[in-house]
Image (tube, rainbow, N blue to C red; front, side):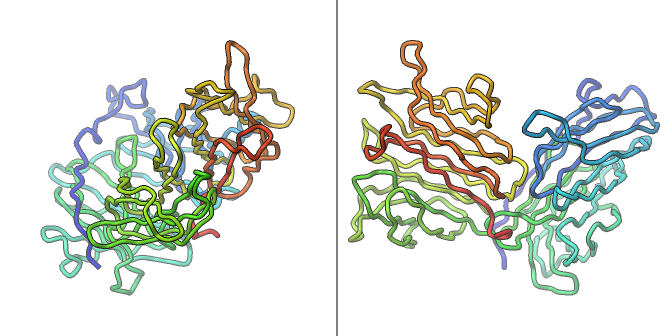
Length: 454
């Protein structure tokens, strides 16, 4: 049950108030704050508007800036940008700002019909103490018991402090500042579902712990997002959560390969996989591993490449041929959230030559129907050879161009129509040489998404 404890200090800088231009103004005691936490698992970047002025925005699992306003009533709306760069209103609310309070709006559920909850959170607590409360957005079918342990951090000595049900009323409790370990069990059970690292909770602060589904490597896993007066979220992961690895070999010289991850005397090996195909996942504890690619007989082609895996992390080892140094491996972190309205595309560029010339970088442009390369808003301008970059695209079908500039002339190395980004999840797009195609290049698109929604 127990995993190693990692002490995470939430520094006092998290408690610093913001200046007026960034959303805070300490010049008036009769003021409070408005903020949005995005707990909608398949949402796009969501923007906070106050009195028709766009203030800030956030992705899933994050918070907007806290914005300071005099105590009064305000019209608040939540919006996102669609593929045509038009603002789409999700919801509108009337908000009453209270003195020394944060009106923390929580958006959760399926983004097609999200739920909005308003939490009134004190901006601080008594000297030497912290306020701590829990808000359950994990789902209607599960409620939790929350245990708090200090000193030894053991579950056996932990105290039951809360039993939050779905969208429960927020009840803040006061505790001394210090190091704590949080445990979650299903309501009425003592089987631990979640154990946090040992964390330091600073005095004079209010913490709201959002209990949500992790949407990562652990099926039905739980994550705690700690929201304070800062403009960021501290994400607490289950200390017993595993990570996962898979691999892809893009080197045509080796048509059938397997892959192994070794730590000490223990090794885990994938199934034999054809080149340009992804291997099966290997589930591993968070750690650093020595990676090898093996031929069909199990002999090492390359060995001792380092890959580090974190809790709830999903990584891909991409094997490719560097024209100067031979086989190499690049690590790509997979994003598994079930995004529905926009998607992160990680583009991996393995192209290094054109017509006998060295290519140091290429441009990648995602164009909608009727949209030119010059008009496109989704573009990676100059991705280096043997490198990777991310681009967020809308939930659409694109024609994708890979361009190279040769003496002022743009060359289309390859293009692919009907590239579909309309399924839940995110994507990896690998650009590489392929002598069997008419262009001499090809693209390989792979979708990445948690098993929790498959």
